[in-house]
Length: 182
Image 1 (cartoon, rainbow, N blue to C red):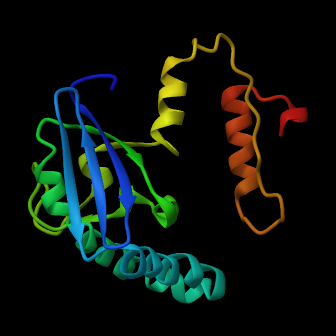
Image 2: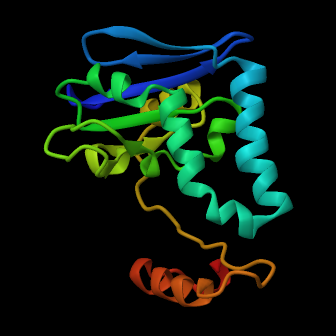
């Protein structure tokens, strides 16, 4: 962990429950979500988020807020946040279908550190970083610093992202990315 204000939240779903391992500079805790096992939780994520997006993205868009609200309830997000005193940054390590979720958009329901009841999102309360696994996080932390990184962009490969070209132009200008790396 880079400092005492950062916590790792590592998610793991079993057949019966989902555990969230909370690692801070001085403690390890487990936040358990009873009844949120593989068939009840991960299959719900697959159906309500991934499959819904693939099968009918316009309906999926209209249901995003409801799906994220239900996910926040299933994870008992308010109780989880209550365990994160003095934490300002989260490193999230999702499990299975949780890799698809924009955690910063999960709603916070109770008043948390100046946010009114029902008026904020996880991304308002914490700086959020993601890692695919604890092992990859450790590898990235332990490796020597990269002296002069080379950047590239992957923009609109299939022509379905309006504005991606403009965004790519802005990023290329900002980071001085050569045309052959775009």
